[in-house]
Image (cartoon, rainbow, N blue to C red; front, side):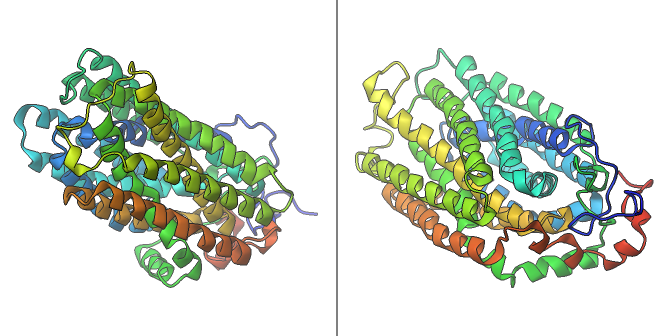
Length: 476
């Protein structure tokens, strides 16, 4: 019997001696927590900024146009991001991506004084490039590093850390604008607070290890790839558009950011005053932490069969989605575009029962968002185990997701009736559930060995020289 360096695990990846310490720096747990903290500081703060409606501005025009530029660029670089991640590795990819968040928050600080939206729109486009890189790297790390039977748990753990950023970020505008109950743009201190957190996340991204250096507790490596090439990645990315698994995911991908515009601008941004919007976001993103833990438990522990767990998870989220969007439909019938801004009395968190109903609805939207997206990530993670493959899959998911987001912001900019926006969101999420069921039935296996492993899509020659799959002294 050979040494661990000569043996392979069930995925055809080289083994290292088992190490049961989950707190090793190169363990999946620590690395997933680190990417969670990076996203806590950067996209987490961005979510808090967006969640206020209009980027914290009374006039949503600049924010809507910036968001259109953002999600258009995100759609392109989300799809390309997986290939870029495979070429550059996580540190460079994440550092470049995180730095664009600082510029975006800074552009709104500038807009607070000069009201010129050109910089905001350009910063939005650059953030789309950076977000595409960040989320492709995040998706690869979150879905490929964990053990195959605990991916739901790791996804929920990441989602909880990440959304704590939205919780803290929601407190910033709530506290700094507490005494401003009338309609107003947020103050400079709010944007500066966001920028400080984003800068911390950018530096923290340098702590993320390359997947070849991350070792699971059983001694298996998270990937057996060497750094890829531009030509290989372009070919593999183009193949995704003909991959039936990815095509079944398109409605879910499109829907998963499409509803943000409606929820942020036309629920939180229309019904509540400035300080209450910040408070609502604390609970919106807090609800995401709860939702991710609930769906993570279902996806990992509800049944022995992985396929059964996936199907149960999709059914649970589908039923919850129907109930929540149904409640939103009932509320939406009580107000419309014509009521804004003169005929709606903005709600404050001290308004008691008048505040409670819309607040619970907005909270429920956050709960559903986390359960829906965590469910989709679990399905993606069940399709493969290797970082190289999953970086492309998650990049495709984020690209289509962002294309939907770009369209949604323009839909709102053109004053499409609120009720039409709600129905479109409800329909898109509902359509996605039977397609995800089909994907789980056809593609998710109960035995890890039957997955689409890395060896089917990465360099075959890696098994001939195991040493080349581990040591990259000239890389990150």
